[in-house]
Image (cartoon, rainbow, N blue to C red; front, top):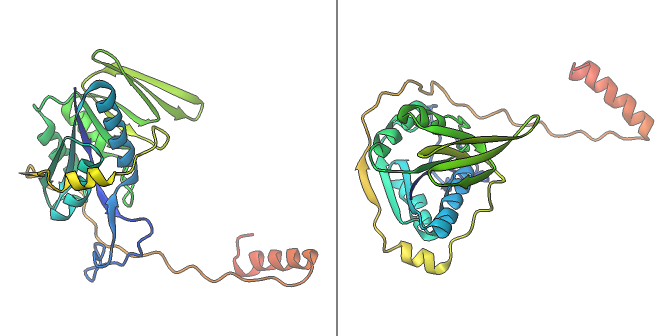
Length: 249
C-alpha cells in the first residue's frame, strides 16, 4: 500500500502576525511556522497504517524552500519519503489541488490523506478538489477509518449522529480532530531525518482563480468594563449599556 499525505505549512496559532506592507499577505518576519494541525491527524493515520499494514508513506507539500521544515518533521515522525512540489500559487485552493493532482496521477497511490482544512485560510476544499480531479472516491471530516482489501469504511460525526461512508480504493480521506492522537518525534527520529533527502519537483503550471485583494487584521478588542455595586445594580447598569451604548437591545 502506498499513501500520500499532503501537508501545509501555516503560522503557529500562538504567533502574533502582521500584515505585510503591500497589504495582501502576512509579514513572514518573526513568524513561527508549523504543520497545519489537521494535517497532523492525516499524517498520524498514515503512520499507523504503515505500522499495521506495512504501507509506504510519502509526505508532500506544495510551496517554497521554507516548507522543507515540515517535511523534515514528517520524516522524523516516520514518513518514508518527503517531496517538495515547488510552486508559488499556494493561496488558491483549486490551484493547489491541480498541482497535487498532477503530481499524484499515475504514481500508484492507494490512499491520499489530507487534513479537512488548513489553519488560517480554513478553505476546507483541497482534498475534495483533488478527489474530483482524479475521479476518486472520497470521505471528508473522518473520525474513524478502516481499510479492507481494496475498500475503505469511514465514519464522521453528523448533526443526526454518526455517518458511515464506504467505498473502493484508491480514495481521498480528509481527517478531522478525533481520528487519532498525533505523536511527537523522537530524538532518534529527528537526528535520522537530518540525513534523509527531500525530493524537489516542479509543480504543474496553473493559473490562480482566486487572489487576495487586501488583508487587514481585526480591530483591537476594547478593554472590558467593571460594574460596581450589588448584583441588582450591576444588572441594571449592564442593561442600560447594552441598550444605550452597544445598542444591541
